[in-house]
Image (cartoon, rainbow, N blue to C red):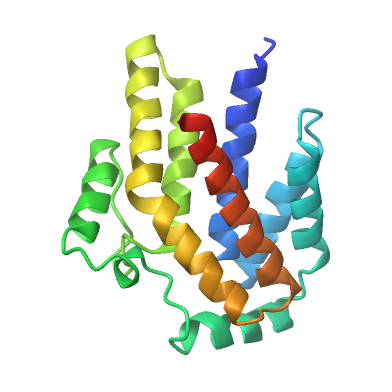
Length: 195
């Protein structure tokens, strides 16, 4: 079975969001290993856009687990840069709204983790990208695509902009500089495409 370019692009987008989700999760051996594996798989796609390849190459070449763990601690664990949307959007309904999106698609956040954390939200849009490709009919595809666009607009666009700006201001190491810039460019590109 040959996949259309649209379907391949959706698979690529889903994998990219997974890479970014892993990249902003705590950099333990498992997350780093999974991230490397996804990036290597992405390199095998002939449809991979040149700018995406450039970012992925930058991420892969800057992975040094000890350095990334120290930098993750400096940037995110010591309270300098929050990784939850509710820290940037002071509305009381952020967590219930995000949770409603997850519930609508049969997902529940892991116990002990905030549903509005950046890794969680990126994992969710990765799943929506996959669900769009795997939809059984046009109605399911339209519902999933609409949810993806709404989630981007209501949750990720402002959050990612503010978060990425804070990361940039902190003068991070190459890994976090690259991955934050990649995230910002991806979300901005998706918003332009959805408009």
